[in-house]
Amino acid sequence: MSSLVEHVDLCPVSHAGNKPTVNEIPSRLVKVLQYRVPVNPRGEFCVRSKVVATAAAVTLATVLGLVDYLTGREWAISAFYLLPTCLAGWMAGRSAGFAVGALCAGAWFLSDLFSGPAYRHPLIPVWNAIMLFVFFFVVVWLLTAFRSSHYHLEQTVECRTAALRAEMEERKRLEQAKLQAERLAVVGSMAAQVAHEIRNPLGSISLNLDLIEQELSVFANSNGRSAAECQVLLREMSSQVLRIGQVLQEYLRFARMPKSERAVVSLKGFLEEKLNFVQPLLDQKHVDLRSTLDPNLPPVYVDAEQLWEAFLNLIRNALDAMPDGGNLTVSAQRNGAEALVSISDNGHGMTEEEARNLFVPFFTTKSDGTGLGLAYAQRVVNEHGGRIDCATAWGKGSTFSIQLPLAVGA
Image (tube, rainbow, N blue to C red; front, side):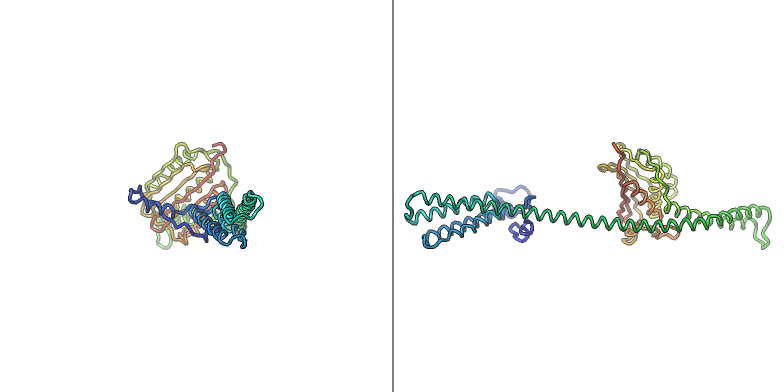
């Protein structure tokens, strides 16, 4: 009866200190009595509740026995013996109820015995006391059984309520995922159409720019500009055309992710190889790499190329957060049946709004960003049965945690 325990607050909380001295023992005993014992799985009350309830029941039984003796046989009060018996059984448990029931039967027997002879046979009071105890025994048994069943019923209702709540949250999550998938399908179709309409003109423009650049290497510009100056302008135009092509390619990659080709991969060796690959970029950005890779890390079953694209997006995001250099920490270790990879930086971190929209497609705070890098990383990790989380604080940096299931048999 968890609800009843919450209202009957008989155990104020106290914490024990170090080993007490002899003079401190009495006060420490008081603290022990005041310590709250948690409700156990069967819903029983704390120790002090049981002690207080049993003491109250014994006191009430004694008072009833005295009143029963003083009033004599003219006033029948034997039914009131149920009060202390039920109190002890409900608050302190079945054993205490049986003990108080026996005490009540004994009190009734003594009051009846000392009230003078009134029966033909001297064993009749004994028989009546035994019958009264049997009655109390049955009442306590039924009362505690009802209490136990009621507690289990409460537990069942709480478990089912929690299960329904979890099911509702899961349905809500699935609906949101379905809605996002539908939006991505629309975006993918639109991106494919846009790419088809733009890619060919871009190719033609790029080819013509190359031809013009070749011609300018021979002839000077009629407006007085040298061929070298015009070549610089043309190269800038070519770089912008290339930028448009890269953006289109990134949109297409996110909208139409190719089917993964998975294989068993040693995550430690995979990360070591790829981190060596990006080391020149880190040196250029004045970023120190610190890696901690568990040598006994079991393999994972992944598409290595897709996973590296996801990790690379996270590393690029970390580099963007450290424009003046800093520290990049990459660690990999086993976490139960999963591999945990962490990528941390000590950059400027993110605001609450940025962290909330971190994996939302097309959300970006960069002037030249597409807002698809982290969304792509999350999509890759999710499709591999993993999970990606981010812990960040403004001015303190960010940590991305990627959990991937280990290969079967690992």
